[in-house]
Length: 253
Image 1 (tube, helix red, strand yellow):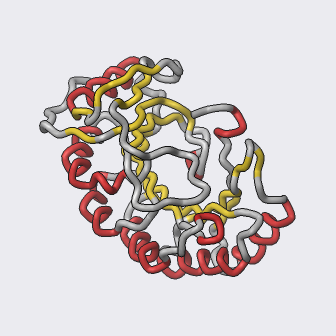
Image 2 (cartoon, one colour; image 1 turned 90 degrees about the horizontal axis):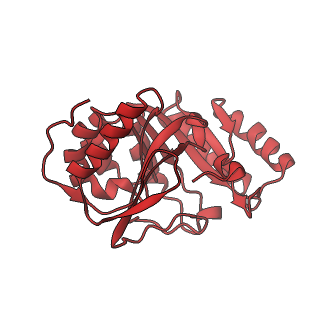
């Protein structure tokens, strides 16, 4: 595949690597992960540093675990060349390119230039905290999948932005989309029921994933709690699943 025509744009990245998607509806799919710096939230359970760094870590070969540094901000021309080479070497291996972070939509202006190029290499999967609806609207036509977090106050440590989540989901539903809510043992049923109601009222066709918090490599919610929350929430939104962070159990990035 020839490298597509590339506008001269660059962005602060943290990592570029190939691994298995460990969360949500695409668990088990191989993806290239493009991790952006910066986030507009500060969730208590976040396990990913997102402060900008002088260099981006880029894997030498897909799945090798060997990284080299590339000066930030990273030019699109260099990134697209790497992704084209990976795709040429294993054209059937990667399901999609995962935009993750941090919060990728904080780079919406850059992504407006990048996504038409990157989408010629592989489909685009956005992982987002589901709060920046205006930015999503500008990019929605360049996306194939959206994994939208719904931030519950009991585990994030911040008030749940219910109105922002509803507005965001009303746009995200135009693509293949699911909503993911991280829950802990401390999460009250009322929060989960409100999340189920928001999804059902806004996008009834969308799957709601309850993701139990991972603590010290273990699921931090007991089985009886998970079953009870699923029982109650499914009465409101039947399209609901419980899926833990599987990549933590097998030692993947």
